[in-house]
Length: 181
Image (cartoon, rainbow, N blue to C red):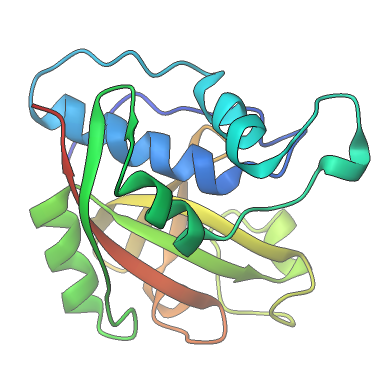
């Protein structure tokens, strides 16, 4: 399965992973429909400033954003023409359900409970103490055998299916119905 061109956003500086994951989800749908999108590297940052109160240069405003609060906003607004019509939590412990959603919708919106062990892992595995590296949202848009792939920090990251299906490491997985037409 081919993924869209990935957005990195400014997640290396700001905690805008929810907005980056949403922009990558929208980009996937635009690509699947053969429509060029207008999402830029700055789109997640602009959303974070608008919705999350982020002020570049003021670290006290560098806070993460609740994905479900963002979904509520996205249900009434669009991201560069991408409209969220519905969102449903799926059972991430069922790898077949996760893969069904990736095929049907182009990906899964994940919320991970990262351990510091993941910082140096080539493939994320369920090791270490969940939450010691904080929560992180990512767009999971591919799978191959035992590996799922998520777009995070602008790159495709291989994630072992045991990590995806672990309720300790994957806090939530969502099916998004996005329309770009």
